Length: 521
Image 1: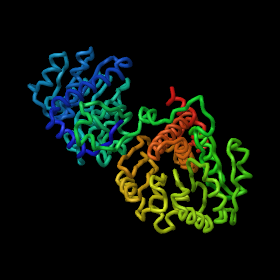
Image 2 (image 1 turned 120 degrees about the vertical axis):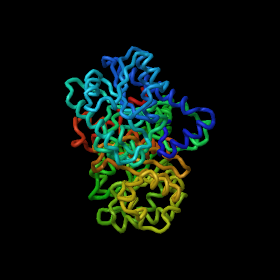
Image 3 (image 1 turned 90 degrees about the vertical axis):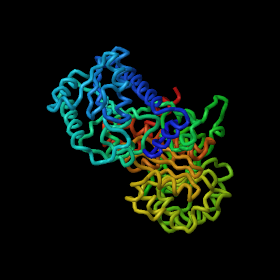
Image 4 (image 1 turned 180 degrees about the vertical axis):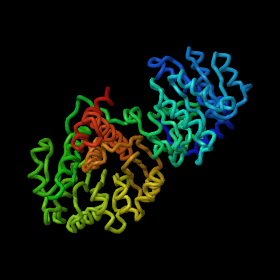
């Protein structure tokens, strides 16, 4: 599992590891060698195997020198360009030279002509100038070199593949802020764990693809072991997916009860219900008003329906008895998509809350359901622990009383604080969706795409999570899978329609089977 850390956490981990026997030199050797292996494996077959390393005076420069030596040992032509002064007697430099690498210093290259020549002769650039400890502003002398590299690469006839070592130089790895001179990377190989600032803007698009290089850490180091923030990836999701036996029936995979929709918002019930089925749920029951039923019954022929009383087209408190009668056979309950904010539906939500944990077990609350919760005192304590709440920043603002700006400035910390305070799983949607469990684990989805910035996208996510929950998964695990699958479906939908602009929630629905197909191969 990929860990997600702050700069201070990573520094503390490394200090402890050094104290407990894994020296800084050993960590650098692991980091640089594994960086070199990744570069060789990823880029060796598609380039002329020529690499230029931009070398700083710190640990990132050391990692880059180790990787250049590894590449030189494996047949690459390598050049180390010292952007900041570094002692040529350094054993790392001497090892590179011994393996045929060339060393050039910026101090002997005031007009940057040697840099220009080296760049034109290299298809791969390793950016190892500045590391995770960098904070703005950028020094003028370094900025001059980085800016020149950007301009030279832009003017080259043949493409240059840029690999950022740990992070693109000039990026603040906590805040995500970036200097104008940052060289955009095609690939960022970050050491041991993903630094939080890499999954923030404006840093994120400057990182390209992000991979991890092992530096020798393991769970025997206490501080490292105590970090329970993770970045979701396909390998983790594969381990969480519920198994499917051929010796099964629809009851094997659970029943999801979805309370959704009103006369003005019919699509929410369809999107959530369809997604729950595509998540692998055995039976989906949709509870809604008659107008929604008439609009959608033929669109989801697999669903069973509970047609409920309405008031002015919205779910009425008179629905309560019919709803409660269904809970004997329900494995997961989702309410809120397309509810609207009518007073009659608010009263219904209040009545459901008063029914409490006796009926609302394994519950997901989404969309208007969240806004209606906020109208009722002590709503947090009336829901069963580990209810899954799926707010976007605006809904989180309603639930917490905080501004969306405050929420967006510290998304991980805000989600964790309220998950702990409320006792529920908080899925804070948006770019890099955060999933915080009240028991202390946090997952961050490493995806930001405008393909999901459309009405109905959240209904799809809520349905996916509920459908997974019905199959017996824990709340946190169901949310992790649902969020990851949803994001990947958005990316696949955008690829299919050839632009993020035109992706609809129904396109995301259509892509979900492809995501599961790739997971199950």
